Image (cartoon, rainbow, N blue to C red; front, side, top):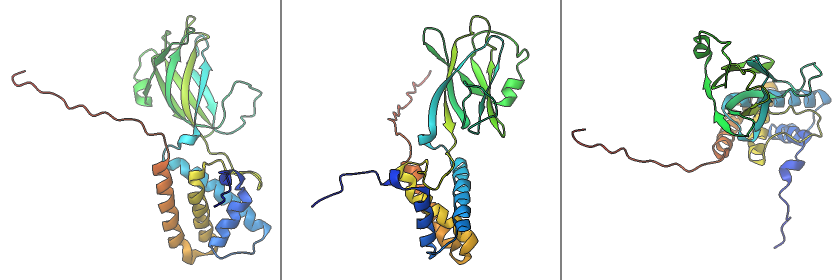
Length: 240
C-alpha cells in the first residue's frame, strides 16, 4: 500500500484554508471578502485568548540581557516593534518564566523570582552587587525585569539569561501559515468555527463550543515535554 511519505500538512495549511474549513463546518460555502476579514480578526482574538489558557511550550524561548552599571530595570516589548531604533530590544515577550545570573566565565547562578510586594519591602533598592532576585512587571506594551541587587561595576557586562513566553504571532496575510504546531490545528479550526458561529450561526454556538473545548483540552494535555518524577518516602524515627 502506497503512502504519501510526507508529514507536512500543517505547514501547508494556510490562513485562508483555516477560514474555509471553519466556514464549511457552519454550512457556509459562499462568503465575501469582508467575511474573510472578520474571520481573520476572530482568529487573532482567539490566539490572544489562548494566552489565558496556560503555558504554550512551543512559544517558550531563551535570551540574555547584558547588564549595565547601576541599571536595575530592563525592558522587553510585547509588540513586534516599539518605535525605536534599538537593535538589542526583545519583542513579542509575554512573560518571564525563570532567570539566572551568568558571569564572565559563563557560570550560571539561579535568580529567585519575587512579587511586587517583596520587592517593595527592600529598604535600599539602589544597593549594588551580584543580583539574586528579580521582579517582573507585565505592562500593556512591555515587560520589565527589575533586579535586586542592582548590578554594579563588577557586574557590568555580565548577563541575565532567561526563558520567556512569546506571544503567538498574528495571522497576517491569508497565505501565511499559522504560528501553531500540528497538534493544535484541529482545535484552531474548531475554535474559529465557534467564534464565527457567534456572528453567523447563533443556533450552533453551543455545539461548536463543546467541540472546540474538547479538542483544545486534548491539545493542551499533549503539549509540553514530560520529565521523570521521583517520589521518596520520608523516614521517621521514633523518639527523635
